[in-house]
Length: 335
Image (tube, rainbow, N blue to C red; front, side):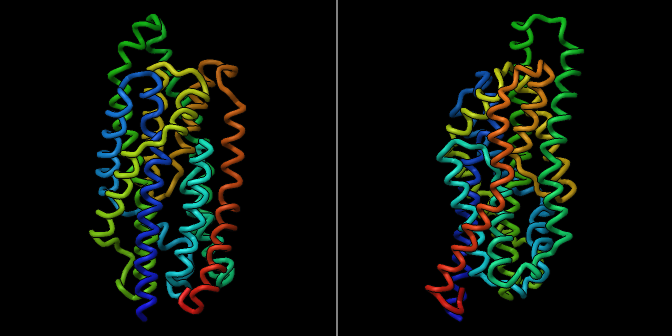
């Protein structure tokens, strides 16, 4: 029993580590556009984003309940060892893509890790097919919705303000871009931090430490703090990819992309749906760039992002399955 308690705390530590890594892995989501257009200084942008990530993480728990309740058929079918393996799979993939500067999805990595660890350890029948399909549709459709929304918002802005010179537009939208970055940072915290909350809550429920899938206050505070601290570290490699390599940004483009991303993520959070903030921002940037002209977008970078979308879930799942086997060999029945 003592070993099982240790495994529960291992899950908590791994989930907080995932949230921390998610913070510096996804810092680019909120600040890449405003930094690349020089609307705000990088250090100020990162600290602002860290604070808003924390506040956003405290606003609701709907996404956490989706992660905790819709992937596995019943909490009684899994244990802390399985969830630990799932988190290891997600963390390893996040670190690899961060090292290579690839803006992959922490959300995809986490979902893939859970599917891989649960499917390998107790069988794929333990997975909630309808719940996973709902999450998959949310993850797949959200960047497409963001792309269309980014295109429409940018076209509307050009229709309203296109008569002004680029110099005037850049000057006027510089302060507006800070506002949109604030919205983006808050929305990022409101959706992404809840995923680790859901994992910890699921672990506590499966271990009999709580009776319902309601997120304890200490879990919310810990996850919000972990993400805020990770965000404060920054993720400069991915900031470079998101802010400069998709297409050449001006302040009006950055404002449109951040505004559209924030709206998309807020909507998903309201519907209790997890989305990849990385992919939502990527979709917004592609849509905004395409509204300018199709050739303005570096579609080579876009293709590498799409490839990351497809490989993240299976590869993080494989890593999670390997982590479970290693843990099972080392710790036997406790894993």
